[in-house]
Length: 174
Image 1 (cartoon, rainbow, N blue to C red):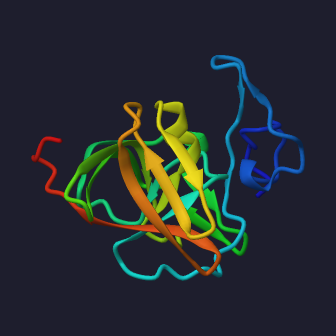
Image 2 (cartoon, helix red, strand yellow):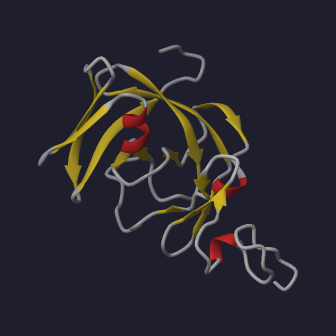
Image 3 (cartoon, rainbow, N blue to C red):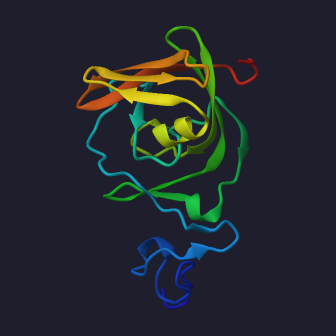
């Protein structure tokens, strides 16, 4: 480890994700270096097609690349996700096509592909940044598109909001 140069503080002896210093500013973007954390990996997805709506996530995360398009290498600071008890490698960044229960289809852009991550994760932040609204209720959540049309109807299980989606063939247009 003595030869390892930390990308965050530029001192030797540790990796950036283990750095005790605060994240440094990224001068090119005017942002702090991103570090992705999962607050709990105890939740179990109700089914293989379940996606968690996460109000604290910065990125959509998929555990499968099977129906991803436009895949590319993620930036260096997004190549590992902290899951509390360990790390999950991010192998790609791309677009994920979902077929929803109401037979509508949506494309999620800039999705992190992390095959060992605990759950498929839908980032509320990404949806609202794209003009959608997310309304949490006692029974689940609703995601409405920029045109105010209902896009996702989620249910509550284990105290969390989930929706089911089937993957859509990558060459199908939405």
